[in-house]
Length: 150
Image (cartoon, rainbow, N blue to C red):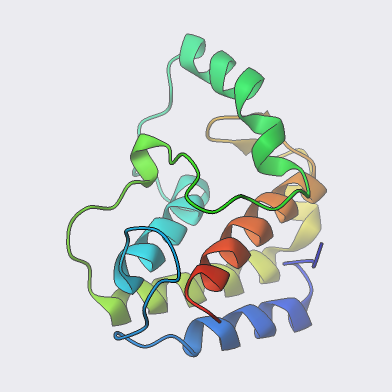
């Protein structure tokens, strides 16, 4: 799996994001391109912004038990998979705003680096290794960029 903490991977991801246009069409799924960008931003909002409520201890335990390994492993996501409720984007979003936010999150993540994420607590999964953070960040974004053909 490519390393989101490496400058060359970040540059590649940003180039792919910048290849999107407001008219880009999905190859599968229901979200339009602006919604997809907003959806991808949720991953970073959970790290950098206090915007989403923390799951209660029972829900956190269940998510950690049932979902964590699926999200942080290296196996790619399948098309049209299940989406957690706080990742569902149903309203219209501003393409440029969401694109610029995503690029900023990618740059911030790369600049903070692996050491910042080693053992860092995630919103729903507890402490993750930097490899698990990398896998989660990269495979989710890669999945959605592929969804839009970039």
